[in-house]
Length: 611
Image (cartoon, rainbow, N blue to C red; front, side, top):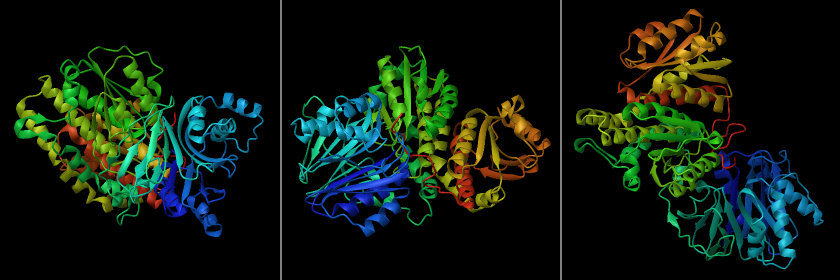
């Protein structure tokens, strides 16, 4: 949520800062702004709405200078307006902020009592005034920032430009991501990697409590108490082309088509069928005692990752014969969990910065539970906080509606279940070999589904004027029905609900009328197939229009459904991954046919870094 960029170096700051904001549009925003030091004054430009509005303003009134900061705002405190847009100015500083100041009212009263005049409704402006007050009391900017932030409760990633020190920028982080990109006699600052990739791949990930002064040549990092912190740059493997559409109309479609490669990378060097062995990148060594005596698993996640967790409940529970509890991370802290000394908490987050999931991880550790993180980002907050981690290797995902991150999360859960099943003697060597070989077939099978994208688009064309959808699934495919409904809601803004197919008779069937589209996930799993067929008969009797996802070779389903999308045959353990792909394509094509903003759906942000 919110995009932050900054630049200090020999080049003009405006194009670099604005280009960075353009790379961060997927994070969601409602206004944008930039501040540049021109050698005498801090100059400000702000605009409501799309970044193009700010760019038009800058074309008429450009900003000259080699020191600048920028921001795309997602409203929390205060409506979208030019006054509430960032950066915020005081006499000496300009400040941008991502996060929420929880003790905002208390600090606001202090600022007003000191005679400060507020121009906006935001919590961010309070931070600017707190720092200015410390400067007015004689403190140098670096120490004024550190002193002011000591009184702040909540989350923040801030960049401060100060006219008193025009040779540096100041940054600080607590609970919201912030990065420093290192170049040749220049530094770049951003809230996410895509804004940095065209300039550098040498990146410093700031950690909670870090406060840094950044010059052209170097950076110095201290904590809030003034102690020096050592943060070395890491080299990011992603290339600048990863942040481009590469000929695809939307990032989401590009990322759907990248799934064979992403799944192959996620499996690479981890599964060895002939040796009946799985490597977990050292997580098995770090959590050896926990893994060997594992008696319960708790999974916490949000959004799409939560649906992966729900699928994991079926996969891990069935494969390992272990009790698995799944909770939305935002609710986890409000429950009184019994912490099993032989239990494990698994946290799933694409970005590794999801605020609610990070809070759940900290709560789990406080309660004595070891934590395993599943994330796409090395060095992210959740990965650092966890006792061990497994990276999904999905590569850069820019589309707000997650696709390849989801299927790679499912892939990790599948081989994690296989690992534990073998470790605890719940699977024979023969079955281990069969399932692990089928895992390695997944990239090819996903590729075969992608070749039918045009066919799925033609099916979607029939429903571009439909008012709502039901998605039904059983077993491990029930969470995939939830995910299919979520994708449709996220990017086409159509009403869609997912249900366990067996729950239809307990209320949802009342929603079905003539022509109601019902998407039914019906793989040939012998445990669920016949019951799912009965559900299709029930909705057909109410004159619904049935779109079925079925296993290749299933001739019966073609006689019952109005439209059928076939997936390759595999074990039940892996059908959720294959089922997810046509649902992503269906949602994408339907949203495109309806003319919706696919990569930047309204009101949504890619990474929710505030609670």
